[in-house]
Image (cartoon, rainbow, N blue to C red):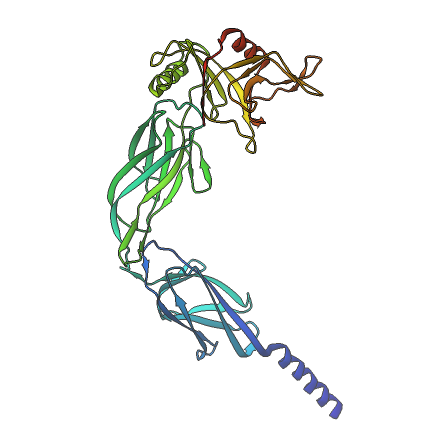
Length: 398
């Protein structure tokens, strides 16, 4: 009998050891950004045992920069699988657990059979609670120029959070535009509202923060409000985006759209030449443009692609003059020919790198790869050397 009683005591001890012990319960909360102004302050929380009494309480400071909270509760005499309750007592607007919203004082059931760490969302107390009202959205598009910009009208749709079209507007820009602004006046809304801006036509794409958006791709725009250093309300309804415009394709035809644009640019620049030719090298476009005429009345002749100096040995910029011709520069494995020098210290226009058997050693164009010279395809540099007289102006821009 004593043996049987001893076994029962041992079994009971093991049972109690397995199901009654100190444990820790964690409430992990992400603080929702409603777009309104958060009131800095303390929030009070309580954890209730399955029987209903308070097990533990906790405080947390919630400020304008708070994004996460982690509350840990030590539970004495914890029983595995017990259903505890968690509640916000003050300092919050509401809690959200598994898609269900709980107001201050409501008890959230937490089943410890599922986990001991519970994830929920917290809406902070804001002023005013409904947010700051406004009725305008402004977008500033910074043109990302990679060539001669085609004059265009870029069209945009503005949709509400449900994707319903609210307004259609367009902005006009051309090669001289750096920033284009577009404003929408919409029915009054609270900050924290979400909109979608959709580029429809007239551009190659739009960038917002670190993401690129193609035509017809919706861009999510979130509004907000904050306080400046003086305590005044700042409404976040103005946004900066990048816009990639459409470009004029480089075309050597004298009557092309490209020719019209570069002629206008050169004639407005006031650049002259001691000959009736002018060479404009655009580093940004990797292009060599040739004009004939005189100051203010330059006519486009043709253009060629080129490569320029690498970042450590960049091609210089400014106004120069073609002052010396050389037949060839020879190196161990390749040569460059012909050579058109336009500045001291060896700056020149010359061919891409050619092996002595006539095959390309490095024929790359449209890149930053040289020691500062401007590399042009062999047939094109030969045309330049045959047609450009000495003292022709060489104008190089970034």
